[in-house]
Image 1 (cartoon, one colour):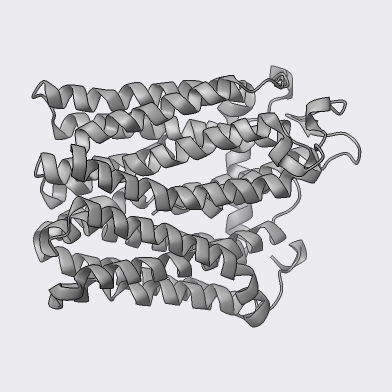
Image 2: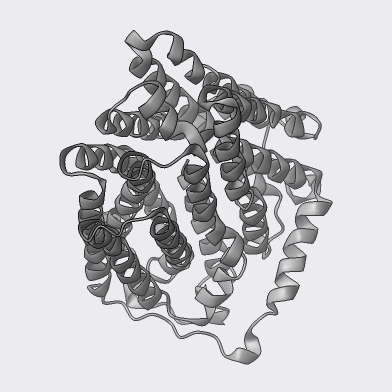
Length: 455
């Protein structure tokens, strides 16, 4: 499950923290700079901003490539190596480690280095790493160990790319154009969830999973090439004397989350959901291929439908909140996410329409979780003190996403002990129970987004 709205909201927070300190000048990397000509919004919007369109294209290509990898790698384990449920769970565990290993410190590295070269290096590194898998397959040396190593290293580079990208946009466009830019980037992120898995399933079905990674690697090379075409100069990094202490910033973020009942509830709900969802996803591909007998193309269709549900959820998040209030929307979205997922194991009892059931459930689950995510991030924004957005966001992501590899590992263990369908049920029960963190907090009573004083 790709949490894309959270990335877009983090981009908006990063942009505001850097660009809103002075009324007439953007504050970039802690320094006040004169307004640069490339930051002025062109007539006709960002469609005519050449450098933004290049960044947008690179981000879109990279996002599709990441989605292809997300499905192709476990399909290689399942279809090519005939991996056990535990082995697939280990692969998912390794895929979640990068957030734990560098999730909190990647932002510091990005602030001390130029962002565009980091993104280019991350794209090139991912391309090279992914190419080792088809080469090993052609040489008869493909193994789960290699898959785990490639998954870990490409994940580390993806974290660096994402953090660099989130920090780079405010240096490329004006403050007035950030909303338009975020909207376009969010559309690409959601669309990649439709295109990427469908493309991965088709490529695996037609050419085989290892060969599919050759085209996946080519997508990262294309992204790097587009990034090299950006012409706007990047501001210099701040001097070492102006850098904040990493340890101090980490402690501040943890303290802010711990002292706020609302922030603590959101993080606890997110962590419980992530842990339980990765129990579910650890065996989801195995369940669809081995229990339901779905082909690689059908699995790709299922994941692509989830992307369509994400797009629908993004469009409904605002109207639903205005109709029911932010608190009831959060509680309802989380409940809807958990309850709809319980339908997935039932597909085993009606094999004639199993694909239709899984596709419909995937759409509904993503719709519910995106309605929840967008409103949860908006609430977090509203109550976070000015200047602390980055620390609160980093802490929330680290705590909520850091449990994912452990959920994946447990899912693999349970898949071998109690079977794939019951493992899915365990994961969905956990997602359902996560709503009680919200119910036990002030959140259900909220009708509008509160201010900092209501934390």
